[in-house]
Image 1 (cartoon, protein in one colour):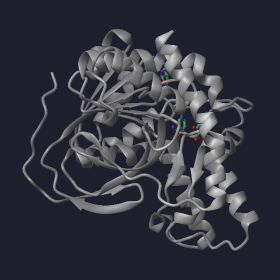
Image 2 (tube, rainbow, N blue to C red; image 1 turned 180 degrees about the vertical axis):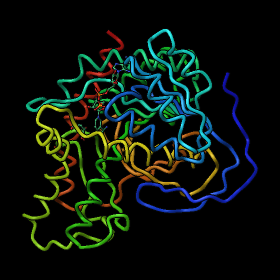
Image 3 (cartoon, rainbow, N blue to C red; image 1 turned 90 degrees about the vertical axis):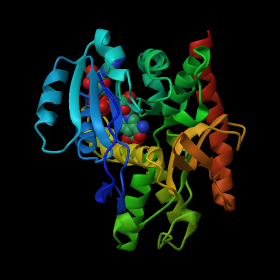
Image 4 (cartoon, protein in one colour; image 1 turned 120 degrees about the vertical axis):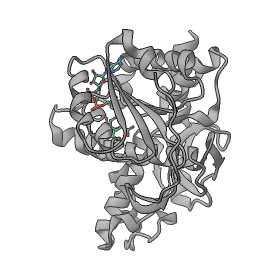
Length: 342
Ligand SMILES: NC(=O)C1=CN([C@@H]2O[C@H](COP(=O)(O)OP(=O)(O)OC[C@H]3O[C@@H](n4cnc5c(N)ncnc54)[C@H](O)[C@@H]3O)[C@@H](O)[C@H]2O)C=CC1
Ligand SMILES: O=C([O-])CC(=O)C(=O)O
């Protein structure tokens, strides 16, 4: 049975996707990965096994290879204790005591599909996982990677609401890959290290709902004309499809997603650990726009989302992008809520 470890204060360096930084971990946390044997789940678990804030890594999946993935990772000479949980009858034990539940369980796209085409298969997977969180670890922070993210977060939220344990600060949709891509593309354009780039990407995680705020990028992309700004925006919005096409039927982004997922999980853990000024974008319950869930920069703290930083000033082009995104987001949210409340 898991019990949370408390470690003496030491200074360690953590590789956080974009940035190197130091922290003093006092608390260590249990992270559960649902879908841990998959294309995202395996490299995500590999990255989480290296995180000094993780004491216990629970790897849950339906796939028969799951116990083997856990044994494989357990041989890494890092402190996190790894346990594998294969099959639905092991789900409750996997979730029990989890501080963070990361969900990349579900089917990915093939060429020609939209993320919404995954709804019918993935909705019940996320619903069942959220029910398990409500039963076993209602205070866990739930980070949902499974697509369509715009609808999956409302599903998990409605399930937790029904169970009477919903805390909007603890349920997030993972949009970090959009930020990672924007930083990567701007880094290339500007000829700088992409780790030195920061940019908010707001809205949601599909097509027109992905809104990179290039006007707020630091440094700004070295592009003079509006046509090129629009082309870069489009590339970020369609980057998932770029990978789906390149993999030609072999799935969607897995490695860059694992990197992005590890980055967001690390931000969540740093917040839980009491570090201040930990900021990442994620898709959460929101009253900033007419869409009741919305992604933008958030401060993470001991209870998950500590502060919503909003999205600042948009230029005319970005305002038009936002206008186009809202009806789509509202539709995606309604579909998710209806699935639980039908
Ligand atoms: N939020 C984002 O930015 C991104 C989201 N995704 C999404 O992540 C999801 C996973 O993608 P991949 O890892 O490439 O797929 P995959 O098919 O390689 O892996 C999915 C894993 O989930 C497992 N699984 C299925 N049903 C399950 C259940 N009920 N409980 C536990 N595990 C279950 C499968 O056995 C498999 O191991 C997809 O829905 C994909 O669209 C992918 C890339 C980026
Ligand atoms: O495009 C997909 O289906 C997977 C995904 O969400 C992404 O890569 O952004």
